[in-house]
Length: 143
Image (cartoon, rainbow, N blue to C red; front, side):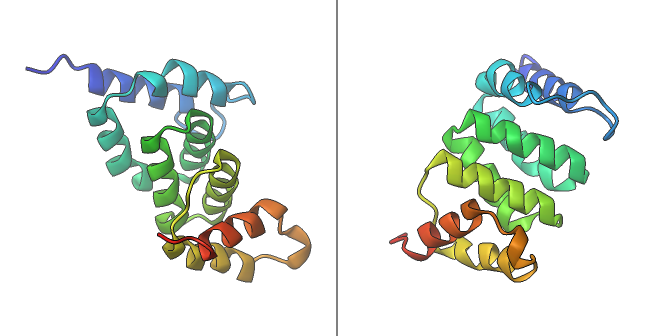
């Protein structure tokens, strides 16, 4: 028997993130989403998000990525790695790199390739230190 909680939490997340880029979103929204929505996610909720996130528009993935970075749970980190490796949007990949670097979590060697792709497609003057930092972590990883 399900309570519908998974669907309600996912709907709550969608409501916070909004239906368009014009939907309200502030610098405080990411922390609120992490502390009032993602914190209550069950394993099923995380699975729903994992299956849906790559189908969402760029603004949605961006907002979700920064909220996941505030959450920093194992599940949030896993989804950030999915965004880094599989999102079709470069800015989403870059945000994921920042969030993964700031989370100071282990990053597997297999993600080095994805970080290098960002470096190769970004003007040198626009490459932030976090990108090189995550690349170094991935390249030196034992996993």
